[in-house]
Image (cartoon, rainbow, N blue to C red; front, side):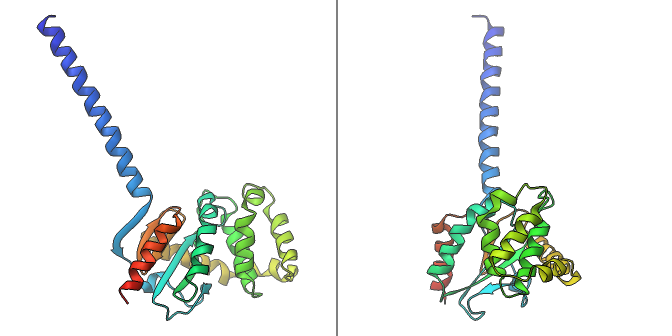
Length: 220
């Protein structure tokens, strides 16, 4: 084998090694950025708002805040995990939902308005659950209000009032405020969760939130 051929084979092997290593590094880096908990805590003043819908006592040892989008498939996947966490830690956490409809979701903002309008009739959480549980049928629909109206009827809401309420400036401003708070907190995707200010991005396993909550409870 000539020296020239050996040199070419050596360069080729080195190039393959670099490329494989680069792909591994990028894959690992991307995974880290997309999901998991961060160490930096975000100020509670940005995360918790008095007029956002909540479950539990504000004086609870642990505050869990979700920034979610009703049309987001990942949020829908996280929904049963969140329900279980709320049930299991009902007397230990304060859970609050914040709206963060993503611009690529055509029905995201409207669904947020519908949930907020249902809240004006005392049924935010019922509509919240209905939207996530039936996301597959309305998510990509060109006529989402037809579905939202049927949900309103099932929940015995005043449909005429709901239609008027979704036009209210205060609801639109509330959703915009949530979106601004999300940006200030470093949120750029849904779902994003904060456990006493610690950010967890992506769809959590039950154990992910359990570990964060238990860790915070042990500090109290």
